[in-house]
Amino acid sequence: MNRTKPFILQNTDTEVVGLIAKSRAISKMDALRLFLNSKTHEMLLDDDMKMWYFSGLALFDIWESEVATGDPRNSLYLSGK
Image 1 (cartoon, rainbow, N blue to C red):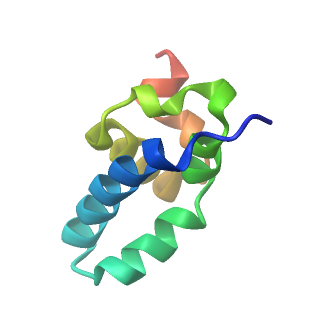
Image 2: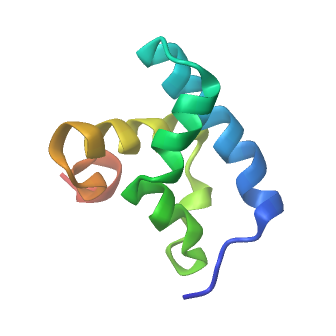
């Protein structure tokens, strides 16, 4: 697996973590833990998947889909439905 460059992830992680913290009314540190331990973030780390092309809002939606269904691929952005 080719890993996505850290400088690419920095802005994306910050934006998604802020959205998670706001939507869940939790601290940014707790939101960061949730996101870093998710399948969505694991997919974001895989540079071959090019998930960093998605906006922070889209990645947040993908993460929300993972939380609701257990699989980020169920998101409308990835399922192709």
